[in-house]
Image 1: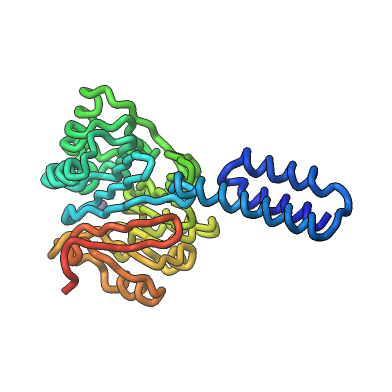
Image 2: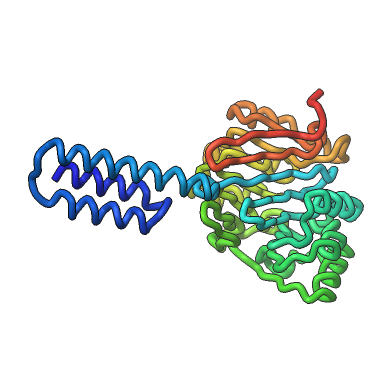
Length: 327
Ligand SMILES: [Zn+2]
C-alpha cells in the first residue's frame, strides 16, 4: 500500500510533463500492488517503474524546453521614453511602447535585426508622445495582430499630434485594438502568462500617467513588472495583491512620484530598470528613487548609462546583459 502511494506520488510529479504517463503510472501503482506481496518482488517492480518514470520525464523535458519556460526581455534604449520587447520561446513577440517619434526607426531596426516581421501584441501603455510617438513607424514596418490600450476617462485624452498620427496609422491599416483593465490576461503559453495589473477599476486620478497599463510577465517562476508612467496613486491601488517580482521597471522614468516605498515593499524586486534619457530636462532618475531602490537591495540598470538592457530567463534564473559598459 505504501509503495502504491509512492507510485501514485511519482505519477503526480509527472502530471505537468505528460498527463498520459502520469495516469498510466497511477493505474500501474494501483494494479501492481493491490495486496501484500513478497518484499523483493515489490522492490523490483518499484525500481522498474521508477526508472521508466525517470526515462519518460527526462525525454519529455529535453524535447520540450517550455516545461521550464524561457524568454528574453529587452528594455530598448530610446532616450527619454519607453520601449520594451518581449520575445517568448514559442515564437510570440510583444512590444510595449515605441518611444518618441524620432526613435521609431531605432525600434524598427531592433525588430529587423531579430528577424521579427510582425508583433503578436502591441501594448500602447498610454497616449503620451514618449510612449506612442515612435509607434506609427513600428506599426507600418511590423504590423501587429492586435493593439492593447488602457481604459481612462475621456476628459484625459490628450488629442495631441502624436495621438492623431497613431490613430490614423492604426485605422489605415485596419488593425484591431482592444482596451483592457487590471485582471485581464493578454497572452498565455505553456509556462508563461502576460496579464494586466493596472489600472484597477477603482482607480480615480486626474493624471493620465496613472492610467498607464501596468503589465506582468510570468515565465516559469520568474516575474517581470512593466509599469510605464504609473505614479503613487496607481501604485497604492495595487497594494496587497501579491505583486512580488524579480525585475521591476521603475515607474515614470525614475520620477519621484513613482516607485514608492509601499510599492517596493509589495514588489520586492531583485532588479530594477529605469528607462531614461541621458541629460534629460527633468533631471531623472530622481536621486530619492535611486536611494529607495538601493535601500531595497535592487540592482539598478539604466538605459541612459547602460544602453539597451536585456534580461534572459529560463523560468528559474535570470541573466542580464547590456549594450554599453558601465562607467
Ligand atoms: Zn513617459
